[in-house]
Length: 290
Image (tube, rainbow, N blue to C red; front, side, top):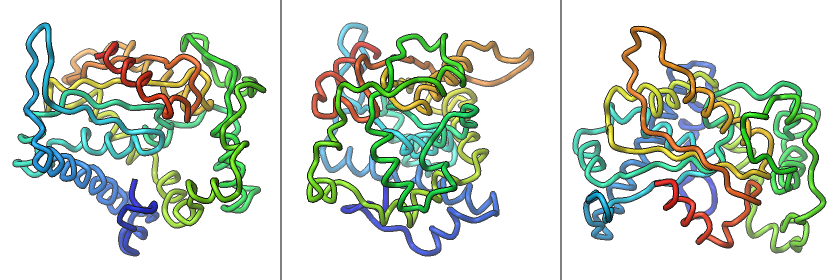
């Protein structure tokens, strides 16, 4: 996501559009996020000589898989959900390379769905200042909640009562002040991240629906994989549950929606941050899903 160290900061005009009460301005600002990541992927393919996707029955080769994490899943949903509007060159170029898009622990914000009733989230705690919300959020989002291996048992009341486990201990609680400062940026949270989190849900939800459940036939062979950590925060478990339920529901009679092939898989023993230090576990799970 932009606005963090090493990436391009948002202009004041972009920030105003993201936080605007005008849905058209917000829609345009979020569309640009998807357009930019599509342009970046296209440039990356060219600059690294990525081979085209080849899908023989026994041995897939070439192509790319795009993985977005946490709230940044709104970026891939914007790209997929607005693929029909991308520049023709970009749209057809990516169709030759893009194999799958992975939603890793998507937040409810990134999908534009309502939060589960009575489930606590520090960034929704209006009694706290923005800085205090960020500080509490770091501990909360890094915690290991009791594992959920079956989405069928998930309800808002279940999530509200789900305890934080004493073990494993979150890495963040063992970090020095200097180490923590090197990998956090409260400035970005206040400048843009909170505005992105509290943008109009319908803007995100329309992109999400078009990306996975009403694709208009654009990029029909691109698969989607939803991965959720079984010890992750309640909101991300809820996101996986909502996608699962939507996938199980039959389209309405007379519906012309074209759904994408979607796989849903939990990552055993993972919280919202787990296994990034062991990427081979994530890679193997992706291979198993694909």
